[in-house]
Length: 348
Image (tube, rainbow, N blue to C red; front, top):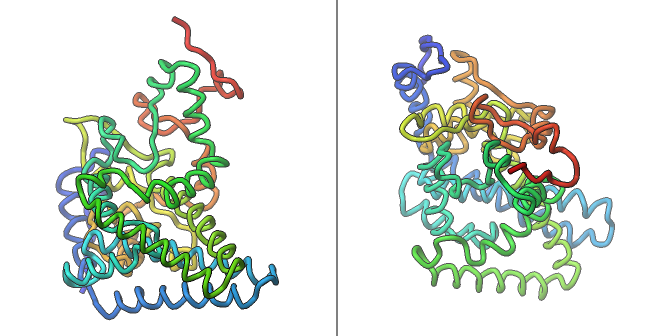
């Protein structure tokens, strides 16, 4: 089924021939399988509801409740990744099935399907474009912009890029607040967003009626934990030292996908927990690859190419990188002279 011949070596310029060969290679993994999709979809829901129920039954035995909350949070993140797949029409075999599945997930991911689909496709279409950074999930300032910025702008950006704030506060803000009326709602599906919000209210009321205050505490814990995991992943997908940005007309979409997106090698269990979204480079290169084929596709690709991967050490180090240096073409920390707690106002 899969290609076995050697492929051209990837060069820094990403030759057109190499791009065509890679595109042909990964196309073998774009086949949808409704059986695998259903197993992933309903299997994740089973884990989600089971761990939520067991956590309520285990209350208040914290040494049981906390691990169950963590597993439930990962299952929530996995549901979000599957919803992301449905937005690309890559989980199930038909657009209708993907749309139904995407809407079915929205209450439990706290994410309205239609607006998420539109905004995420915008992110794909502008990937790596320094002139379209408003479509990225995590905003990145350039080194030149930092040096030209004043005190308050620098202070805001420092706080924004601080992982101790960005991960917990960003997770709560995004999934609990921002998704209640997300960007482009008025243009895309405002009434569906309102219906989605009412559905979430009904779900929370159901938890309260069935499990009382302990159920609400457990649910809040899973939402908070899932939000932190989600921001951790979203940050690492495009923020690492050797990522890539450029401006048109030099912007190369293939290089932006393969070099500007990460491949996280954090272990098989982590891949399983997050539905292989860790292999974000080939997802951006070909969004038609279902999540249940991403890992095997990436492993096969590594046999023919030297593919950059990021382990746990590099992942945590990436959070020290703050600015895109257009001259070095890499993500860098704040300049040494500006690493104090108080931003330095640039000289006139």
